[in-house]
Amino acid sequence: MEQTVVIAVLVAGAILAALTAALGMAGAVHVTSRRAQGYMHLIFYAILVMVAMANFLSGRDLSSSNMKFDEVVVLVRHPLVSLAQPLASLLLLTLAGERLITHWIRRDKAAQAPSALLVAFILFWAGTVAAPALLGANPHVSHDYVYPLVIGFAAVLATATERDLAFTATRNALLLFMAAGLLLIPFKPSLVMDASYTQGLLPGVPRFAGLAPHAVSMGMLAQLGLLCLLARPLQRVWLNRAAWAMGLGVLFLAQSKTAWISFALCSACILVVRRGPGFMRRVGDPVRPEFGIVTVLAFMAAVVGIAALLMFGEVDARLSSFFDSAQGAQLASMTGRDQIWAIAYDEWQRNPVFGYGPTLWDASFREAIGMPNATHAHNQFMDTLSRSGSVGAAALVLYALVLLVLSIRYARASGGLTLALFVALALRAISEVPLLLFGYGPELIAHVLLLMTLAAAAREARERKRRPVNTPPVPRAAPAFARDPANPQNPLAAARLRP
Image 1 (cartoon, helix red, strand yellow):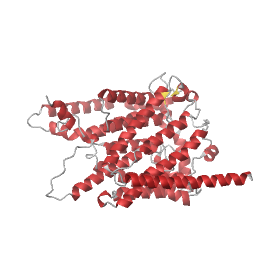
Image 2 (spheres, helix red, strand yellow):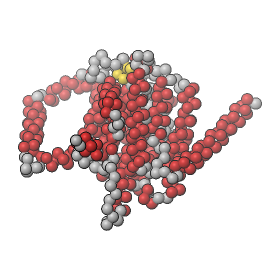
Image 3 (cartoon, helix red, strand yellow):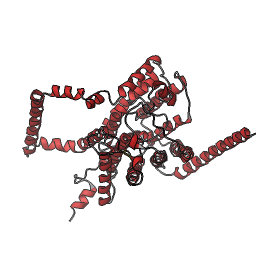
Image 4 (cartoon, helix red, strand yellow):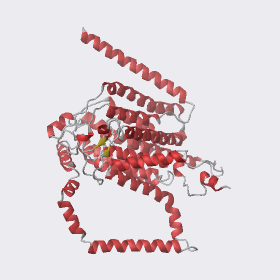
């Protein structure tokens, strides 16, 4: 009798949830049918709220954690998280599904998604999620696999306005996320700080993880927040400076060398795209050759210095001594990740076509291999190869090539932001899995932002081509992330120059 009542309650709840989703979707479509944008940007708040809630209520103690993969860390899933997770999933599905339905209803030919990006994303999802879920050695189907498909599809339909809203929302959400972690330091230091970390470049300084799953994840989120802050600065100067100080402080305290390198390279990409043409014009200016001469001499001095270091600095002996040390051995093995890669390679050899399946690296598999904390292969290609086989690996390579080509193509139009986001994902893919589409989490944020930025840039390029030749272009302000504060054509800079 009790079992019958439970089943009836579950069925009634499922029907009620379906009706609520349908009514919510219909209401959202009705509200946004006459607008150029929807509420897609709210998904970033929802994702980070769930991440913060899950880690805050997990009861974890970072003071006794370490980087070894052979020790079990038990995290209890709070009942409140179990209750909020379906609601968050329903919200994400509604916000993204509304964009798809509205786009289909309006049928605006000028608003078509870039075909190459759309096809590549669908093939990537089909090859890395659908194929192993249905045809893998251990098939497994879950509703969580559909959410990234719907969200990514909606991101490919993004307009310039939706892109700007997305960066603003991500900036605000990440700043609040970092601030919440910092505020918890006096009250719950073991929840947000790893005092046992001894492998960083700052001896004696605890490693800050905040409300992120790990300090490495916190570092990458801080780097992404700084990129969003660069793209969409805060209007108040003092608040913008405070946000930069907080973001750089969190990036520093996270002690993630990958995040530091990624931030430096991403910032360099933006600077090269924005300032590169002006720099080259100054170097080759025949009227004022002084700057070009100094630049060439500095480059020659740097080359001579590097050559002298390589010839007389005994670099080979220093490297040999370093790799013989404990730190060098740890770096050579990528902190034990070489063992995980070997297991991933063995699983691919056993299932070369469609891979092991989505359940690879689940709790039972980790227990079988004796690595309870190896939740993935710690490399995007190796994880995809073992989980989705050769089919998934081929889809990953194709998708990465399309993203690379489009990121370079629209780098100027986006002020270097497409290239910066691609570099961030590529560097993250060396030791993590930022392109994993089996569910949603903090790793999905940068991926969706890149898709939205590419889609908006492609749409703007298509609109320029569709404009008649004799029609003068409609004056419009450049996107905030494409403006150069040092450029006099920048409206804000021009306003500052007025007496």
